[in-house]
Image (tube, helix red, strand yellow):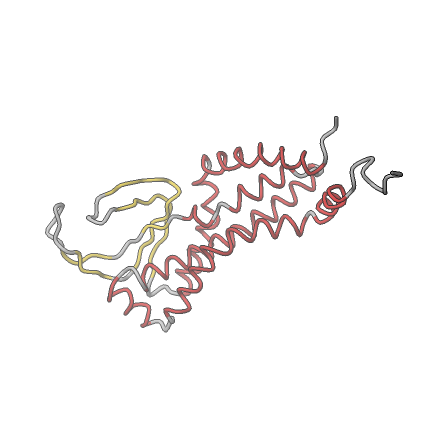
Length: 225
């Protein structure tokens, strides 16, 4: 028996979505690079007094300053903010330049999510490539937006009095930074791929709705009894 269009799409999505996430994570440094360049242009171009550099290849530190993870997809952010480092087991402390590490992957799961849906949708090769190109461009913009918000949040809320003073010196309100960070972290990665797929495939979705709404054979009408 031929499966219904809804069931066929669901089965294909179940196959393509995990594969898309595996490929996305495997090529993470390459896929992060365009968004990182966009975020770098914004941060260094608009707030050059605060940020000095941005590059791939960062480290995640624990509370004592020890390295707990290194990855090529992490982003190392250089700032002009000096902070006081308290004495610890690895050193006497002192004054250093703040260099937070950003994880851009938390803003980029939109890529494999849209890719899996697009691969499960019955499209011509040309139309699928066009959709993927549009999606990647838009999602990279959203990912860059998230990184900009996190970079500002790292200074405003995570860097103590020195970071807060630096943010105040350029006239950025903390409430606005908090909103940008939350919007880029919670809303955009989840909403953008679904909204984009729906907007680009309305004809297919209408066919699914019609197919799902059709009554089964022999079930319509009243019984003679």
